[in-house]
Image 1 (cartoon, rainbow, N blue to C red):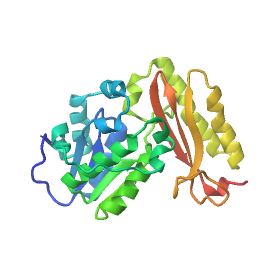
Image 2 (image 1 turned 90 degrees about the vertical axis):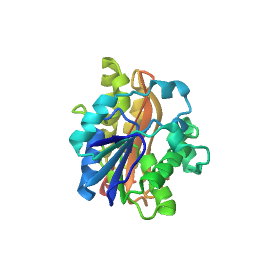
Image 3 (image 1 turned 60 degrees about the horizontal axis):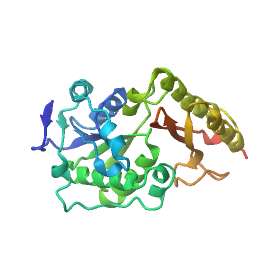
Length: 269
């Protein structure tokens, strides 16, 4: 595996896994999926300042360079790319807007976050020129917006969705999890438990009641809990073919998000 600051010649075609580092088994699953599509797999590590409204959150974002190299190599990456801010943002980069959806759900609590995400992913795509790019479903709103952006600006790139990888407790793997205390990690399990309980109900009303229980969960500060339409990201109704429950909130001051698909055959109004 080559480790680079600036990309040299890549073997074509290549698959691409953009990350912000602090790699874990979830990232490894993305890399392994990428290897199914191409022999050349580029993994980028770049903590994008444009997607952090809270500068303190940016400063606290975990950095584990040695672990990143080992996990990327073990998963099958052929290039680990660590671009510099000046290399990605020389001053004339095209800044993108996530539109109205970028201001809802995650965007409502993180102003400008998705504008920053789309801007950096567009820039990375321009430089890597991959045939495929792999993104996890845990960040489902991000995945939705990247698919929209790629369809418009990079139709030559296939966007691959990868399932969420979880700890044995059910907690979705995240680089932020290492900031949780032992008590906080136990509290965080309430998210996946609520999603699982909601997915077993047979009406939208009952599903929403299960999600609403998170409001009363001690030490958990709920931001939103909703059931949306995967195809539009609008709130689900009786005509929704692909419903998905989405949740976000804070534990120990750490923002956590999760989601789960719901079988449409279970939905009855």
